[in-house]
Length: 136
Ligand SMILES: [Zn+2]
Ligand SMILES: [Zn+2]
Image 1 (cartoon, rainbow, N blue to C red):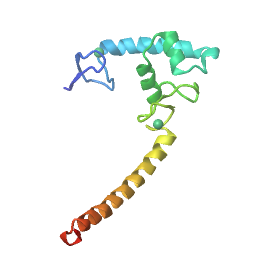
Image 2 (tube, rainbow, N blue to C red; image 1 turned 90 degrees about the vertical axis):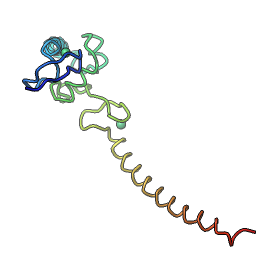
Image 3 (cartoon, rainbow, N blue to C red; image 1 turned 60 degrees about the vertical axis):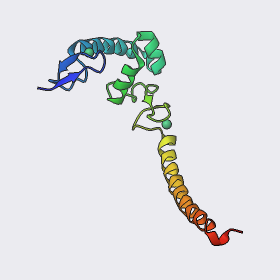
Image 4 (cartoon, protein in one colour; image 1 turned 45 degrees about the vertical axis):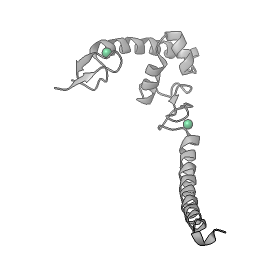
């Protein structure tokens, strides 16, 4: 039997299913999901953003992000929903990072490699200049 701490309320609960929160929070989340879904089902709300949904339904944005991440709220149906990029917080609809961050990350890695090389060379230079024969 797995005992887990509920990430929402901190209560200890038995992990008997795929739920990631305790029964009580799960029920609350389901009620919130119902509310959100009822809101989004209306044609005029299809293009709502997370912010709008959060305001209209009084459901926490984090919860909305979780549902989008897990595909419970489909961005194919609700094109303006999304969740924040792990790095810069920009709203994205797939993966963990936005496009800029994933390409930026690659650039940064190569910059880092070059910088390392440069420092290695610098170290050698410093070493030579400290050679006592060079003192005047
Ligand atoms: Zn809980
Ligand atoms: Zn980003």
